[in-house]
Image (cartoon, rainbow, N blue to C red):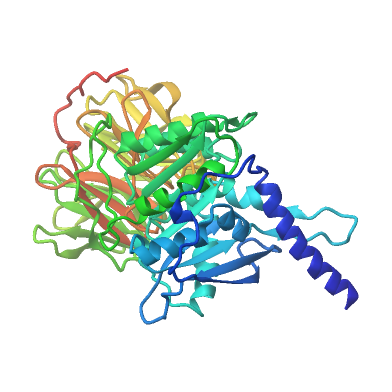
Length: 581
């Protein structure tokens, strides 16, 4: 019992120490506080409850404390807004945040809001001569959705057992300083369906655990409905991982470029401390909570190099209830067909939007494509065949004895990928086939340029797409790791799968991070959000004007109207315009 009690005391002291270490800045001098940061006569004061201890499952072995600020106006009759602050009560008090919230709630400048002030986790040491594991950087500096899931799946439900908390993302603010700031931004970036107001002070957007990539991702990614306030000082840290003030200016520049609702406050001479952030806290809170009750909308990027998205046009559901959708293909008129591999079916979408079965017992058909003669070609992998279907669903075998995943047709011949054997094959419509490439770790999606001279193959396990030049005899030459893809922090594999091409020569690649749009030189210009939570397997342009992007994602199929047009493989070859280099 004495050992248990001793360990418990050490855990609590370690959690406090972790907060101090993580907040390794001290206030050099007292901040010049505005009246809204000071107690005011006649203003009801909220209550701070805690500390409460939490043992996480998402961060195994960790123990941490959290506190709850409950405004005097809270009565539980209606859901309260939420303000989550990293680094616990110490951070909130360093900003004078409870007092600021008292004043602003009383003035009506912000809604009734419950504060959750939470420490980073610590894995206690097994004995007094050992060092505990401080989880702060692991939890806070990392990009990805892990910390957001910790809040969404563990902390909010726990606090919600006692307090009536709003689940509207517009009612949730998340805040932090230093590594806690990037943790706040990351949580909202990954889960804008949960958090939409972000307060970032002296944010650590530098090369510690990948946060230095945010300015680039902000510029390339489809906008999210976020409102962000940034604070930093000109004398912030400049160390091995980067220059904090420069990094925060890069964040501001990127958010402005992409059209986000963003404001900032730069302190002259301010270092890695809380002085300036405490001084501007009322202003920041008023700005973040302004017009509460009105939804925070996606901003529109005014100067994005590739302007493919139409404001207000989102992904729309075409069909769901399948097991795993793949192989979207369109007719010359732009009508959609797709496969449901586990259910052994090919479906088509009629002009009135009805989804019907086109073929059954399809041998696990995966990749599809329509040929010039109007027949539907399919990778029937379970039977080791490439087949084609007539318009009335009659099937004939084209190639036998091959393993296949996805295909592309180029005139009167085609190419298909064989991921299990790391091969790319060429085939002709009279049944002949040959291996034209070996060695890509997992060749998957495959497309040809509109002039039929270049072939691109996706590698699911890598971060590159491979480019080949198609020779007059159909063989492939000049292989290069050409297209560079973004990968998530949680997995070094891009998940590159199906692809399609538009009339400008851009290649749309389905990946773990969404649809990555590469220009002709192989650079990602835009990342379009995934339409659903499942595996994003493939895309194709269709519709009457070939300006609708169809996506197969998990058990569903989606559509989105674009400022771009695709083309049908049966169309006469044409050269796309010369790209900007």
